[in-house]
Image (cartoon, rainbow, N blue to C red; front, side, top):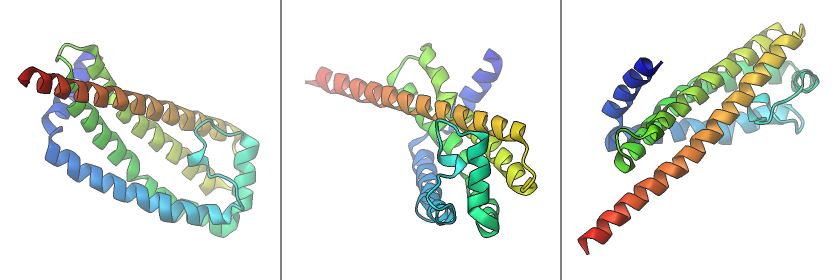
Length: 193
């Protein structure tokens, strides 16, 4: 496991440059805004006020998923499957790569190479992985509707929760990285005075 982490960490360190980060960050935000401002509101308009499964960080019940799919109707389910999900299949990759590189950049600028904090730079990779598993579960549920497998809904719900946990841990790590980065810059400035 340590060997794999070291290989991933070497790749992240190689590509965690300011220029690459800026380009990826802009692309990631464009895709995120496309979902946030266009595909998700359009999808939710079919759901009569119900939240879509992707937006339920604490999870959902099988009954909720069934009710949502029923409420969406044929047009809404097609929109979910053929409009929202395709965009959401791009975003997890961008999230995982961009934010792993960002954490790597912040941590290597703020902490010693031996620090265990560098392990946290892979958290966005887990977030992206669980997001893909969540999306696959949603695709399978939508494709099989009106047949509904409770087990599939429960497993997809688990992936949604794991995605949320990974994302929350990423944001906590990001705050730690930013504080470390600012602190190191402040110390350098103070030592010059």
